[in-house]
Image 1 (cartoon, rainbow, N blue to C red):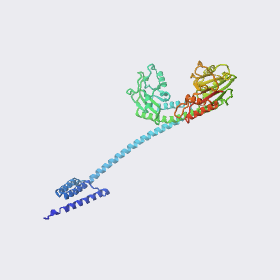
Image 2: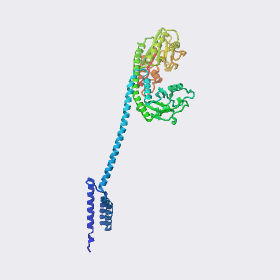
Image 3: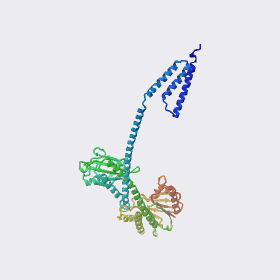
Length: 557
């Protein structure tokens, strides 16, 4: 029997199709943003669409009713909210919220402007302070003790600007890895433990501070230098880094400011300021001012250091150039022709050193004296000592005295010199008697003498290291006497040759020199010298050398 329920599938499909179309339109509106659509409608239509299909396939029409009821329940709260909503009130709340946000934004802008103004003011203070210090620093370029005078000026400036009672400026000693006081002003109670045997008197305590060497640890100065972090110590009694040395008033510690002097990431010094305990403690503003001044001091120190380095280098170059010119004039213009022996030599002076010289003195028929010397010092200093030693030896070899005695005379003459320049030298003196083919050798310092024996093809070192010339006039030197035969070779050199470095930092050493001598022993003295020179050049390559390189070769015919 056909009833109205027979056609129930048709409205279900129509409902499903219309729900799908409506849902699609809602998605299009959402994507194109043509109107605001609540998510509630999406959910309600999706439920109706799903319920219609489910009823169509399962033929349980009660589910369609549940789908309709569920869609209504989901839509009901939204519709109630919209029915009783007050748009004007809602708009007023939005306006109030927006006004509050604008107010907060303005307040933030005012705070930001205030912060920016503070930063600008701080930067202006830094720039102005740096300008003042750099302008003043230029006046120290032409003065003696430029750096010391500049630090004294900085000390006065720091003390005045921060109203401190005392100030010390310390810089590192690169050789000892310690900190030393380079400027000291006012009252500065030592924040470190004083030596137990030091009397607690102001002049003794101040002297101790001026000349103390501070390690890079276990004291407040070393800690600030190592960490590179400044410190404000308002109450030194409560700070374990400050040592309380005694009850005396001048030793009572008040407040301190410690700040490193830094250039980029490198610490080059420490500034320490003190204020007596009976006065107001250092404030954060004082601390900030100290940091600004420390930056300005650092900025000024860099060009001053550069200028001093340049001036020193220029002076060394000037002195080295003059000394090098005169040193060349002291060397023999050409090698003498001596019957029975061959001679070869060369000398490569290093820049600004000029400490090596050699000499060949035909003093008598039975004596030819050979000298290889390495004078300590650089430039003009070494040239002066070189001239003194050369003059003494040229006079003394004309006597009948032995080589050791001649060195002793020269040593006494040098030791009598009371000038402040270094007057030390390493010397090898070789007296050769061609009538008897005997050699008499005496050395002082580090200049070695080697003997190549042709009959055994062995090479040995004749000399032994001793005190250099110029240490003390009581130094005793020793003679070595050798009987020479045809083909024997005597070689002496300075330590600059043996200590020449290759590109890996390894020294040339006596072993390489011995190998070249042994391998080329059949050559004449001049060619053998050239082989030594070539081998040395090949070994060192492009590595920079820091000392003169000299060698003297004597071959018996």
